[in-house]
Amino acid sequence: MNYEEDIDITNEVDLVVSAYPVQDDDLDEELLAADQSTQQYQEVQIPEVVKKFIMLFHRSVLENNVYELQSIYEHSFNKLTEKFYANESWPEPEGISSLVNDDQVFLTLYRELYYRHIYSRLTPTIEHRFHSYENYCDLFNYILNSEGPVALELPNQWLWDIIDEFIYQFQSFCNYRNRIKNKTKEELALLRDNSQIWSCYSVLNVLYSLIQKSRITEQLLVSKNGGDMVEAAGEYGSRPLYKMLGYFSIVGLLRVHCLLGDFTLALKMMDNIELNKKQALFARVTACHVTTYYYVGFAYMMMRRYADAIKAFSHILTFINRTKQYHTRSYQHDQINKKGDQMYALLAICVTLCPTRLDENIHSQMREKYAEQSNKLTKPDEALPVFEELFLFACPKFISPNGPNLEDPEVVEQGVSFEPVQHYTKIFMAEVHHSILLPTLRSYLKLYTTMGNAKLASFLEIEPEQLRTLLMMAKMRSRQIKWVEGTLLEGEYQGTSDLDFCLKQDMIHVSEAKIGRRYGDWFLRNINKFQDILGGLELSSRA
Image 1 (cartoon, rainbow, N blue to C red):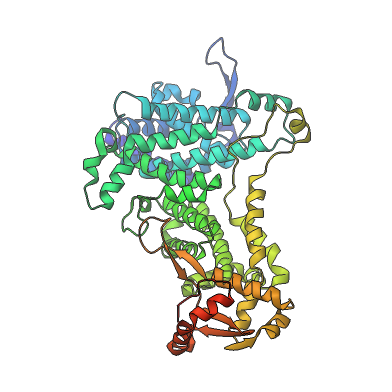
Image 2 (image 1 turned 30 degrees about the vertical axis):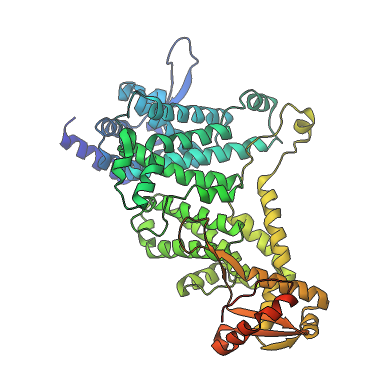
């Protein structure tokens, strides 16, 4: 096959939607026998254009033609999927092995796409879940345990999708395993006898091994200190395949630890990645860029660092808005839009809990999507159900590192298992419940410069002593750890509100930024007196 023929095939694939006629008669079914000792299976006849596509795909993998692979992976494969396989699986790997000379490396890569398509468009069976896991094991064993670096190059988008899909299928399996009800005895037996498949340990082991093999942590640390990454790369890390898989594994661990509920460790994984650095590696793939900021923002939110969460969400939403004309041409357009909608919901939550002035475009988009919910979030009698609704829509689908005990007959009979999403929803809602009156309190304080304690308590319909507690809580929530420099976990305690107040002899004195410096200076001169009144809480020195 010469270069001109390659071009002809590529053009044919690009024009397949309009150029290749497909009739039901053309998709005749026939029984194929791989071997007399194996069972027969039914396969749909492979259209000629798909055969040519697979041969071109194989040739590009053999030649490490990354440019051609990127076009095949991002465009041609998806066009053929829409035309032929929108509601069915791609041809089984055994059915195309003769077209690629039984190349096991290519077949492993093809299986990765084959099972990903089943997860995306169809409903995977338990056998699909097991076989996909085994295929990932084959792929990562080939990459990690071959003698020396493997001679394989793939586009960055595909490398990210491999890590992303690996974690997604792990997450999907964990949730599937937890749903004991309506499972057959055969399914329960398979789960019980194959507890090591999609285990948390094996998934974490793969991600950490890719990081270690690529020496990406050492490379990023050298780059962070102004050095040359190549010097720290080593034999494996100097290869793009290992370098990018290692880097994407760091982002993958950020995601996995968030799914497991360890938000501190999730941010710890990002120690050597500078989010504010121009041309960072994660920005080379839009889906990775969006995923990084989503999980960083969510981890900050769950750690009550709302100001940092707002900053992360605002940054990536601005990026999505400015580049949305390019996303419409991407096969991941719907995924990016959905993730954007989730982040707008989380942003609405964070802004309610930590009032902050947003970029005008971001604010208008948020109001457009969640105007009704945003109004209800500030009303104590309506807010709780809305907080829960938005959180359940926007939060990641948490997982449990261990599945239900299938050896326990009572667990199997009752079908009861731990629900991680409900668990973390309760944790979040407990935090919201304590803060439910703060927006109303803030709205009253903004109207006055001085106000009697009893009068404000009557407005809020609570007792004066309850108001004192609420004021102390508001004072505490007005100061948060806020990132200034260093790693994502570092930061300084800063005031996050333009509103400050103190309680003196049952009178509340309010200071707002717009009132001016003189009133703020008065607060500073009398700060020691007010500390005793508010139980020794450190007051904001913001004027």
